[in-house]
Length: 146
Image 1 (spheres, rainbow, N blue to C red):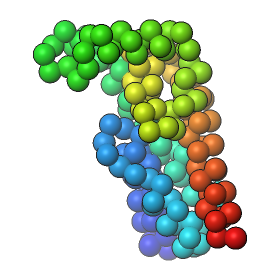
Image 2 (image 1 turned 180 degrees about the vertical axis):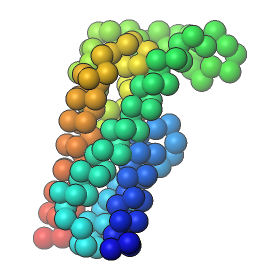
Image 3 (image 1 turned 135 degrees about the vertical axis):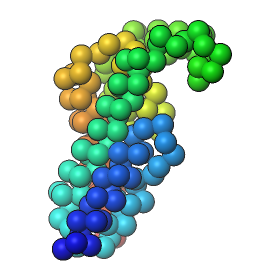
Image 4 (image 1 turned 60 degrees about the horizontal axis):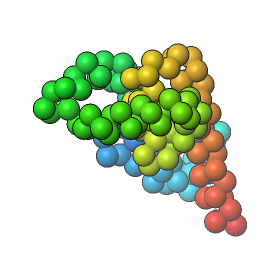
């Protein structure tokens, strides 16, 4: 029981970290737990999706306060890069958050904070994208196993 709880906690932390700017990979943990078969698949999807979505909320909150530092020398992107990202987001809007599952999708979640996307809409779209990703990952893993 304790080992199962620890495994789910590890999955949550891996999924949370993977959604932030930290270099985590949750897919290996997810697939490993799926292959182990000791937890219900729906529970793995739920835990990973919640962790990954909450990690994206951290990015969103960072974005809310990040723009005030855009003229600092240590700011992580150039003025041109920030303007390009804002322009892209302004053009494609909140629907770009459906790509938040992708490798560069974390940037969209930061820009969503900068652009002051309503939090409820942000969470809804990101949760949909992240949950869809884990469902597809689980399906592909099961398909591979036969």
